[in-house]
Amino acid sequence: MSKRSAANGSATPQIPDIVIARLPIYLRALTYLAQDGVKTTTSSHELGRHLGISSAQIRKDLAHFGEFGKQGTGYHIAYLIEQLRQILKLDREWEVAVIGAGYLGHALVHYNGFQHRGFRIRWVFDIDPEVLGRKMNGVTVQHLDDLEATVREKGIQIAIIAVPAAAAQDVADRLIDTGVRSILCYAPISLRVPDDVHIAYSDPVVQLQHMTYYLDPT
Amino acid sequence: MSKRSAANGSATPQIPDIVIARLPIYLRALTYLAQDGVKTTTSSHELGRHLGISSAQIRKDLAHFGEFGKQGTGYHIAYLIEQLRQILKLDREWEVAVIGAGYLGHALVHYNGFQHRGFRIRWVFDIDPEVLGRKMNGVTVQHLDDLEATVREKGIQIAIIAVPAAAAQDVADRLIDTGVRSILCYAPISLRVPDDVHIAYSDPVVQLQHMTYYLDPT
Image 1 (cartoon, rainbow over the protein chains, first blue to last red):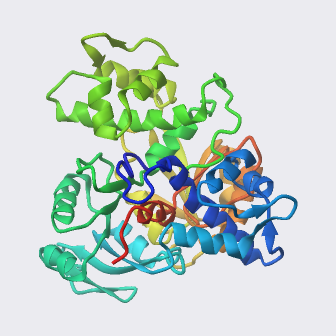
Image 2 (cartoon, helix red, strand yellow; image 1 turned 135 degrees about the vertical axis):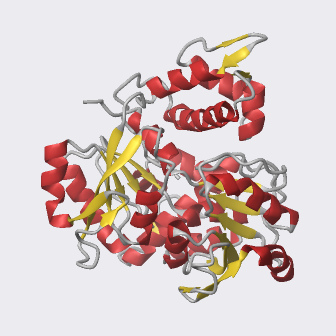
Image 3 (cartoon, each protein chain N blue to C red; image 1 turned 45 degrees about the horizontal axis):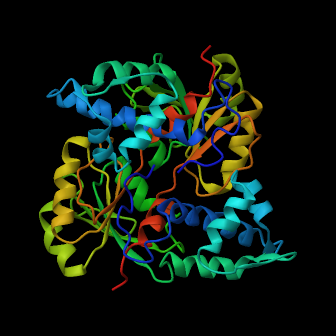
């Protein structure tokens, strides 16, 4: 669940952030269709049905970035994937630091959804002597004391916070002070961050609470 | 990242789903303020600053449900929390099933963000003999063969899918066939679900891809 993400975009700030937020969802659906391998083209109607987004919305969103489809033949899937990857700066691999090597950090480091989608977890930090020095999916858990030096030396721009809520603000401050500009936070709290830092939150409870609105209590 | 969530709301369907989606975020921010304990009231301006949402948007969203604030004094935090919990049907505890007892299932079962926020993980299913019968945070891992019987018997309405992508559609079909109406999916694929099922996706890559748009590749 993303919020205050992208308050100040540096590139083409005239495109609404809510449009940018939908591009990765289009990219995921297109990649899914491409893996299916049955078709080479798709339409805004097909994508829309797949995603529960109106076809008009999809056409309007994509029109911000150019002319990707043709009336009658629709979108060429591989081409649109390539274009979206360029727009989202995914035509390179971003190296990511994970702070917290508990159950969640473990799950993240072993998550295979990062592969081929623009990201690689290269660093994991923790303070627990039990996990320090341990290899997780090829990444050695480092002490949090090394955080600042590593972020500076490696020019890390993206970090994932997977520490308990009580420690999250302190970790965020340290990341931001040393140059991190994008943070995905799994701790169930709202962080104070400067306007030029993009922050997104992943909180299963917020997502579940949205859905209970529509349920009938029994 | 929620999509197609709430295509057909049963209660007060005139309120846009995008408004409903923001209520849990307001609730989280208010709960955070309440825990701080310093203040008993807040304003749409303060909430907005905290969340990166305009104060006008917050006032407009809340106005769908009644008159919660007063010009000059703002919102009474504890009262607004109580009202939002009622609107979102969180004035009860929802019991949740988790499918998949791998690293992610582990992280979910041990996540303490569910407590006091309306949810309790009561069931965990898997097929791996290594984990079957094991206790995770007080919950015994059951075989997936028991899924249908348990969902029917217990009237489970909410499930979290934490299985690999290749198994996710099959698990979703089985959940939906036996009565589950809200699914939070962690597998990195888009699922086909009927219109009366609400589905939300948690995909860190989609959230990171949104943020890379604003980064400068070095």
